[in-house]
Length: 317
Length: 249
Figure (cartoon, rainbow over the protein chains, first blue to last red):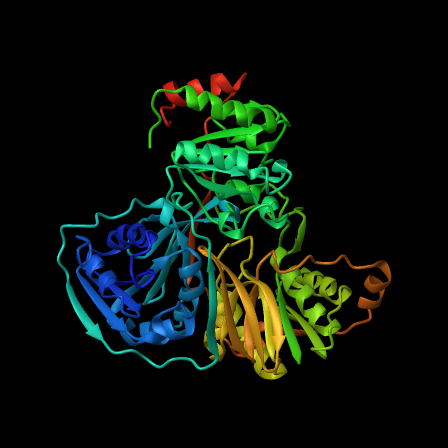
């Protein structure tokens, strides 16, 4: 049997986590097919056909797939589901919204957010905000699985030449209408895939003070993150939130500034390779996961940090 | 309109989880339990809609052991009108939960079903979407703003790229984000009044749905611990360590 991966894309480009999901999917079974549902997304289908791990691309082109309407996506996926043992996608807001709708119609108990493939039916997944790891075995005939993208390396993007087959759209739902998307455009690296992330918390005190963070982010070519408290307080938009109900990041370097380190925040960043905490409260829980802790007032420490960085001859990009 | 709100009893969000030594799960004995946080947002939103005169009745439902009733009682204290408690003896999977909820929806005929976007215990994030699929209703997940229109809702959803706004026709399922609203605390008089509100008790086994597990939990273990780090004395030392020791900048 084969694996069907649902591609996430914006009709022009493949969204980066799709490549991480491809790695996990091909560990489940090498016969990996990718389904592209989109509107004029030929470039997306072509890019995915060049991924060596992908054996076949199924491309369905219709305007009803221009946006991710789970209802429309689901009816198309169900049409193809019969030939596959596994239906998989990334466990980001795209896959989290979509996969359970598919699983329920297939009468399958979904395995969410896996961080390791142990065998075709057995997976490792975090529970309780990553405070425990559960090894679970799915006994359903057909398996629906979402993949935590940051737990798998992205697949190679070139060298392959999979066949692209066209397929017909399924019925569209008349009860859900897309109205608009407010996407925050930024020249910085994406939070989910950045090599360095610098995050601010409640200690930043207001939105203007995030300039201290963005100056350093520019210098280090880092993405900007935030704790839930900072987002709730309106200092920064929701797409920056790191944590149990936000994004999970695993950068080489994570710098937490003015973040106390609630369990829910740690869930989103504690797998980072190197963690730095800057906080004036020496007892803050963030220090328990930090490789380097600096007990200091962030309003003094951040400008000094920038000037020390400016003194360096080279900075890795 | 009538709104059904599903609430779940979970280990309190502030509790430090301990894994059982035999690997069978996490310790729940003598551990503080409370309502799953985004489920509080779901109740709050339903109450606000009722206060705005756009809903007539709010029914709170929970599925769980005897004590799960506490979460329904709390929902009644902040404004739900009556409760339903479906008793199950073991932990059941989101697919089974959504099958039970479907039975209740068919009986109660609500116009909207609200619940939290994810339970903070199993972190599955499935039930709302599954229920929507089983009912063939539209879904609006991860809602951070809801506007009630004539026979439709305009919902702003929190997605990775930012915000998305969709319109779903009623009946619909909405799963709520923590930023949807600020849940209120129950006042003492309302807690007293809630004690008189009715809670209907049902047994899952009487509903005729298959709630047997499909997923075997083989073991639960502690995640690998991070090596203890060091405190640095100055920003200069920090930057030197990052450059020369960790070699990340």
